Image: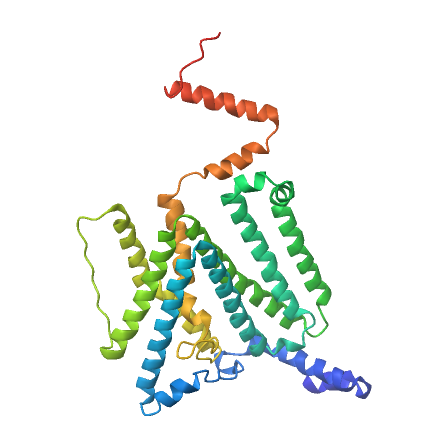
Length: 367
């Protein structure tokens, strides 16, 4: 079959034809590969600063990694405290930056594993879809939490009212561009990467959006879950380094309401949260890589540090919507304001009658 394909290309097809043949054969063989046949991703380079390498040169590799991880962990925690001090807006920018970097790390693995650098438009399309999904989610956040601000500006009213239609149109544009970019012999590889991009968006963008949603519910719903995962990771590493296993049991009595919530969050962070890390480890082993990237010396890529955080953020969002948060008055008011005057009057009369029946309002003296 390979010989027939080469002969079919013809001598006049040149190097471009040979490239198509080779890439087509590679795409056709992907479904027949087992895990041992997956092409290896080039190993990450050592990004440890030279000053640390010299300072720790006399230590064994085990203790050298211990000190590198420890120093960088303290640096990251200090930076996190500084960003918390700067306020919610900076935390949102931090979440967005982490999301973009995690997306870049995962999508780069796909490019390398499937050798898809030759595909037309695909790198640009991947980032275009990232922008589209972020536009949708951040627009939803603005509509939910800044309804009063939006009502004062006509341009924003238009964008918010037709936000989902605009978002769909943007995504549909990218979808059509993908279809137009399909090239004979590359079809299967292109659909592999299309699926890879969308799964990556699901993992990074959707869950980082939930982190921001948790932040808007109150800073404590942002800090406690993240701190729980950080503490769980650090203690697991320390106990694993010195003792090998970590049997930890915590019992609390005379608790405040949020302490009860903290037990639920910490239990998830300790028992279920690590499965995000196990999932990421399985993903990396499938493609024979140690880390997603070498962004942080001793720690790997940003995704290596946030694999559990994304799963934790999803749980916290579900927990808040199920047990904590009630109806959103701002969102309800926004929906009322776009109704027709007759509909608004009907809502007003219905609400007034309900409040009178409850005894909250006194009935009018006029007949």
